[in-house]
Length: 105
Length: 105
DNA sequence: ATCGTAGTTCGACGAGTTTCGTAGTACGGT
DNA sequence: ACCGTACTACGAAACTCGTCGAACTACGAT
Image (cartoon, rainbow over all chains, first blue to last red; front, side, top):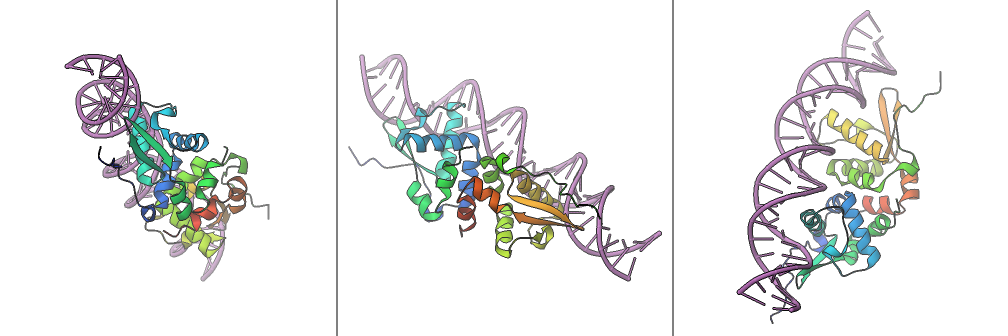
């Protein structure tokens, strides 16, 4: 087979904007999703994390997180594997992700 | 004279919600305002910071920041003095404010 | 080839936000 | 008492966002 490319567009590290990151994580559904992603560990299929919304809404939220530069999505067969872009976010906004994810309430 | 009360409702430290803080700071106008507040130092009149919006819009944004628990507003004569609630935010979400405010771009 | 699973795309709808202008309140000075 | 300054309150218009269902694509298994 050929090299499997990523296909989905992600912002470069330098292109990540703080407003977009904050906007993305301000939504309860997305914040919950990213927290679960962080708790479970990296490399989880999109649908493996239960959300109180339909599939299409989840797709919408995942795209928002991806376009903001918070998560990276790659195809793996019929699934999408989501990982938090911790290295990029930590490099660009040190302490931000830790502060948000460790906020319990 | 009598004790001058605060009058404007602010959330208690324990009542501050991370979603509200992120939502508040996700807006470019509000983020700029808080950054200016941080740069100039505490205790600045509302109107002293220039914004590309009208007065009534600024009032709206200030209320959003106040209700989210990001700034404290107190009356001083005819002016409103705005201060960042750094102590409360640092206690509740350590590192968050620093990370956001020090993000240059 | 057919079926099921995983996820996307495309409108559409309702709710909330940002913005403004105008009118109003409150305080301080002259 | 009057005026100016500082800000708030109240709609209204334009826009964005979260949500859904239905239709679609892509992959893997039988």
